[in-house]
Length: 237
Image (cartoon, rainbow, N blue to C red; front, side, top):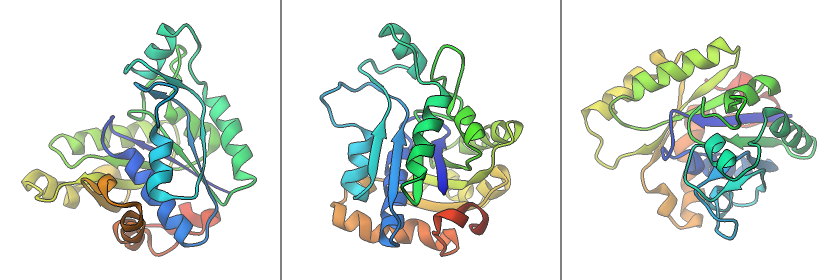
């Protein structure tokens, strides 16, 4: 089975678009894909969420959302204010492992950054990855401060014994500044993991057919051309 956790250095950095691109590439190569979103905030029950966007762009994935809250707050805070518990890593593990028995690839898209608390016990998406023994794909912005954020993320993963699959820049500007261009050179060393892709800004505004056609060009060449879910983590880079 193949399970990959998609996390990042913060919020609003393109995790959903990167997840959709991963779905598009995997689907194009004949993979059956499922995507789990443990928790989402700042959205009403009747509104389309991140997983709807993943399917609109990437197409054809089974999607499972475990919890959502209307207030645009950190997950644990939103859950507390709603009078309920947040999501524990064990719940995500059960959902992911069940799907992994039916699908070739399971993607787990985190909320916010790697260490954002999901519940009042302090559980995070990093804890989920540790329990699953799954590698983490880190999404980072093309901005000043990215190297520090990626270095801290890498240290947090290492401290928990979690493999970092690599880094994807989630919103590459049409006209990158000097900081963004230098980041591409320095990210692999800082992360201690390969740069696996660069997804352009406003990619999510493309027509789905164009998004799917271009996704392989953003990611696949940097993934060593291999997208077999069972061996994915050991063949990239």
